[in-house]
Image (cartoon, rainbow, N blue to C red):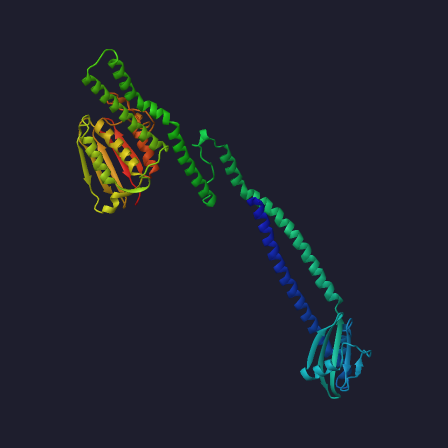
Length: 451
């Protein structure tokens, strides 16, 4: 069952239960209050009957006439009987009433009053003391008007209930359609998203409710899927681009080697060169497969120390003959816990190596400074060089794969390192910012998440 239909049924049932309960309370209250009013009127009529029949000898003619008028007005649909000590009818309607028996009369004499109802009448009896003796006054009135009123109220409530249920069902359908419209719009937008358009985001008004949270979560999921899809989509481009140099070296060496007979020493030299190129291709392939998500990392989401990665990278760069700039590493962190992070340490090391290697390559031989700072209980790593820098125009495109600045054509590079580093930092929730001025240098700031 769809949520819309479920909400409609639930709201209708809720209204129905509440209305039935309210109707029962109203009907029961009206029923009891009407009964009470009738019994109160009957009690007054009992007193009027006693005054009219038994107080004639004690009232003036004018007072008795006034009592008679009141009695006749009140007793238009009621019947009064006054019983003596022998349980016989002394005054009023003389025909016996089988609902008024000796037991009822004795009860009134003992408890002074009684009220009850039969199938067709309401009864009230009181004990009345007079100078002529003790009497029991009974007055009854038909319940036809009472039943008519209560039945009419019951019919009205049933009609209102049915009309209310129908109205609330229709209103619930309309309101659920309005409330469900954003969900329908989201579903339609999701259905329009294809593998080639994963970078599209669900457009939704900023309602600041649970639906907005769902849209934001889904957009974040789409972004992660888009990033992964882009990596896998460009995997062949990465491989072909990175494999050009070692493949060209292998084919060139073999072509030259095949032109004439060679000595054993020459065989060994060529084999070493070819093996070196093959190992280079293997390293490139492993790195690219790791980043594209086609190969799992054994260190995924594990604890690692950022400073240890940086020192390992420093040692590796110092062992590289082509990289001559000095690395100056300063640690301003006093709390050792800040140096720990959780994520894919292998990927982070690759990304840090690319950033530091770029700083060294483009530093014009000047020192590269690496600072580890405490920024609001988060580890901040600042990598700063004072070399060629990046122009304002090139700075806009440095995250694009294979893009290289116009002022670094004389430096060997592929334009892939910074692009991959950006993706790695994003996947590991490391904030990455870069600032640069041409001929003044470049500053890369990394802010690691709290451990």
